[in-house]
Image 1: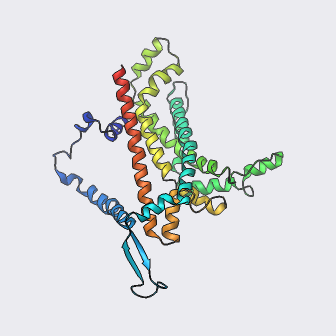
Image 2: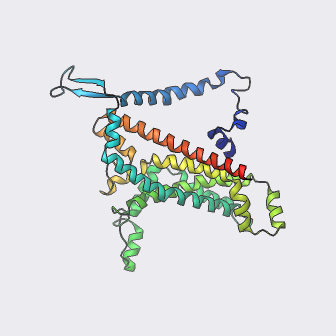
Image 3: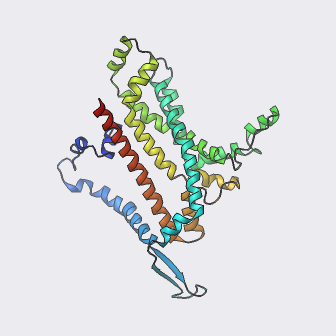
Length: 320
């Protein structure tokens, strides 16, 4: 599906819904392998996590011997603890700042690069396109390690140059700047992916629209603002949605950088808190409840954003 079809499917467009069929001959078995894998590796683990989120463990005595630990029904106690936990709320605030820094900058650069690559005056588009996309192919853990060593003053070549020039440059991994350091890693790796989506949508625009606009005296800037950007708006909505979901689930970058600096706590992001609770403290029940809260928040943000976009498009069409 192209970005327009994805947007129509995600927002429940009735016209698009009528085009969806279950296989070539309407048989259910065409989807059986996919549904089986989905059930085994996604639906069942999610259901088990939801089940654990309503349970807790009671320890009797020293917790030794058979029957010393008993799993009981906890109701919404784990959810109450998660929503009232100051560490969780602080991690949500840090991720919100991270998203405000990352998402607008990343999508702005992706749109700018896509428009430049689509321009008639651009040369070596193939090399430029691969160069911009290549960082996305680097795994997040490896990218975080590379940038982490570039951030450390003792091993970074940048800090060596700054020192030789006599510049007093603050440490990027300090408590006040570490969010910028983490956002930079996400920016470096995410611009290329979003650029490809937007660039693909630009290449699907009929060239006749550009020729007609240029015959009317429109400059390259006016063509970009009046034709290209409005037409690729569904792609921008799609990339924003993907970026927002990835922001709420940030984990690899701060987790990889944490051994390199003491400014990143074990609960820097919500998913890091889930990891800490589950695998360090052994409290899988609280971790499951926090995971469900994160999943519901991601779904709610995605749904509300798509509804707002859909209502905005409907309003603009009615105003015309």
